[in-house]
Image (tube, rainbow, N blue to C red; front, side, top):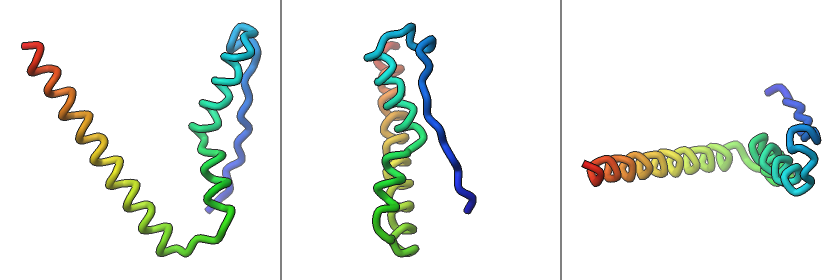
Length: 81
């Protein structure tokens, strides 16, 4: 697996010089790149079998969440009719 180097930066012109907005944008970008999560995961060795189980658990949770979103959207559409 190739390492992916990521440099997250926020320019002042992106936020029109607003420091609070700049910090929020930086945090959002770093979350999107999963920088903090990656550091936490690499802190200790994790067996491949444990990684595999975690990956399956996350996939299941994402599927269930997506299913719930679809159901709610369908309910909203039916309510508006």
